[in-house]
Image 1: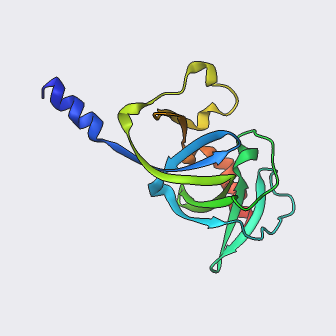
Image 2: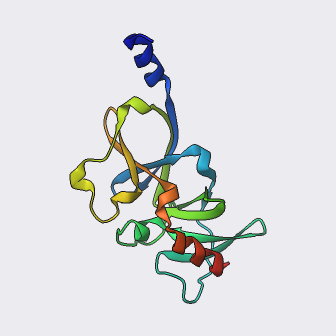
Image 3: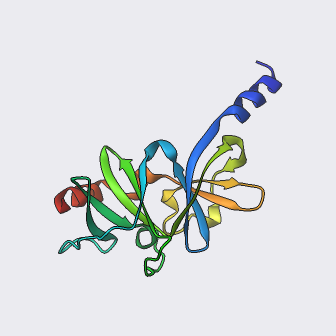
Length: 161
């Protein structure tokens, strides 16, 4: 394969993402993991749940744990508003809702415009960051939704239901 063919193949690999805001930062997750995006619902608090768990919701007869992604990423909580959404995803075979400040768009970006997060960023919650996408006018932080929850946290969520 020539280098031109290799470049074409690399540039043809598109990432399809759902992008959302948390504070002033824009994040993205693989669209294949997203089941749906819903407006904020009444969340039922669960006693003794970890602080990043807001509670549970009843989504068409299914009880789904809801996680405040701000809290999970170490960002200060904020009041929910008209833009707040719950992104319902499939994580390791479990359905979980993540509360985000706002969902911005569905986008397709070439994998070639992403790169590993800079080493300086590899701080507290960098294990959740898969890559950083360099768009024309902004950066998009790609979250590895599978790594957001540890194995023990998955077990805690099972106990919540």
